Length: 396
Image (cartoon, rainbow, N blue to C red; front, side, top):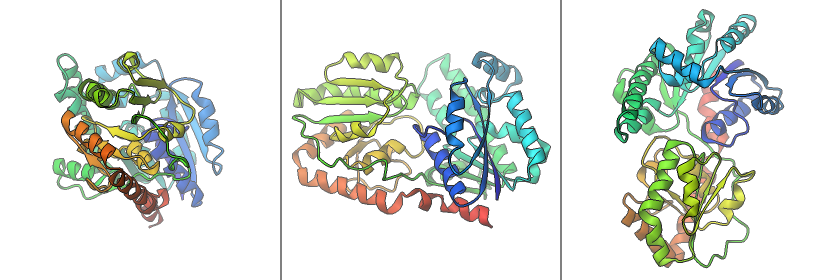
């Protein structure tokens, strides 16, 4: 099959959630023998190198176009009365490139990664002669609604506007595209609650490469426990999670474990996250070339999420590295893990502290949970297994 992938970012390097997902979809389809052409907007010229590196995988064809200045994009979105997410990833010049590609290529499928790039399809009448696939990933309108519910004026107005605009846009996409995907069953159920007649919406889960994430050959011998959180650290749900954990739990943990450490590993830490490094025992790494060594020096992974939805790749990575995970139910959403079996769930600061103390006092249980989580990854979270529904759909 000849497949055009319209990606909202160059999915390389695969170093953050949506890039990991899209990269593995493209790689999987290319390895199956499909012809893949990727188009994506870029923020600056440095990303051209990433596009060139992506093109080396199974002769994938890649086209890019630098976006106009962000302020102009967002202002235009406001004036047009459209979602700012859509405006943020739209380029007239990239539209022209896409139009030309569709005109000269006999594409069998167009796969869009995120609702933000559906506009490129809407602005090309020829695209409707092709099978259209949308990978929503997460239900973004619900994410913005969560932001609105937890924010004060004026940002509450901004987030509420985005939630409303995107919800309407997502509904339109479902009506016009042939098939739509979310990462988790819970996202599918939430969408169908809003759009009960939606019969073309399916789960398409995330996998994990166990050649890249695996347990340490020699377990760390830390005097006091080392905790870790990983992720892009200017992303609001990640920032909220670590700030909450430090503010609500860290001093209590230090009272039990005076030399405990909390490693916050990930690119682009904002000013609030950077300031955490001044607190005893907390390390903010910023961008790291390799994340695996940080998992290997830790004893526990904490996932105290209170915002956003969908499968957390970082939790899957921690499972694969043999780390016990203490998480809010939201952090475990969409993962087929069980409380007290592969993960420990907690909601309040006291519950987080209690679960950590419980694991520290029960080495046998700690190993059982780690082993069960690792088995879950090996048995149920291979990328080929998770992406088979996509291939089955394309092969029809």
